[in-house]
Amino acid sequence: MGKHQAKKLGLYNYLAPSIIGLLGGYYKVIIKLKGDGKEYQFRIKNNRNAYYSYITNFKTTGDWETIIINLKDLYPSFRGQTMNIPNFTGDSFEEIVFLIGNKKMNLLL
Image (cartoon, rainbow, N blue to C red; front, side, top):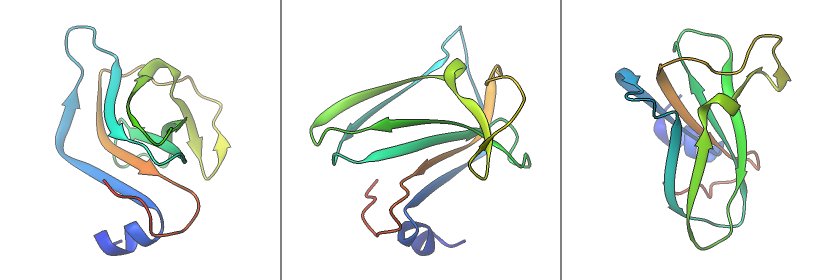
């Protein structure tokens, strides 16, 4: 899927050129953003070939804000179904995705 197609579907996908390691016990993702009042889904894959992602949702306010995501709270999901495997416990990941499910072209990153 090309970059422009991804924006039309409300999807922003970042494939890391290499594995992103989590060093020194840092197991949070901190995102500083200007919100738009919508809810987003944050996804990571510890292996870009895995069929499932580890996900969580967060809502923005419309102001500048800091979103803190505890990686241990990310649960495995595939096509909207929770998988019967443990939450994220890894020390690295290879893919990050931000998703908004309204299918409109309004995700600006």
